[in-house]
Amino acid sequence: MKASTFLRIAAVITFLFFLGHTSGIPWTPGEAPADAAVIEAMRSDHFQVLGVSRSYWDFYYGWGLLASVVFLGSAILLWQIGFLAKTDAPRLRPIIAVFFLGFVANTVIALIYFFAIPLVMSAIITLCLALAFTTAGKRDA
Image (cartoon, rainbow, N blue to C red):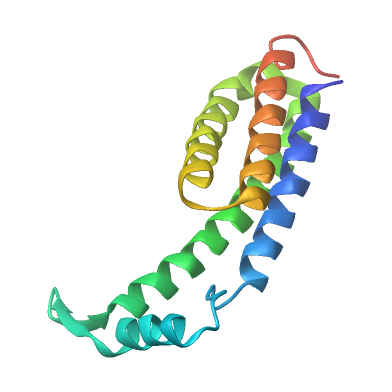
């Protein structure tokens, strides 16, 4: 397969990752009383950060939204460079390498802190990016 195909596959899986992550809002899977107590504590404990009152919930929720935005942006960029790879794949190798390294880190983080679905999706995206990088070494018409 061509680099452009691997990039498009990575883009689609990254978009699915975005959809799955975003559909999990507010990312609180537990419903037991102890889980609710943790969430309430996160919401109620406010502290000053650079002159603004924030809670642990603000950071938790905000970083979750930020992750969704990053996944969506990555999916869009991967799709766009997939089109560019049709005419000039070798010049895209540095960009593909940056995405690859980012998704390697994402895969490791998913392995350590999350569960099977984000781990598998991250690993597949990483594999597609590795294959795109490898196949982009030659013209991809």
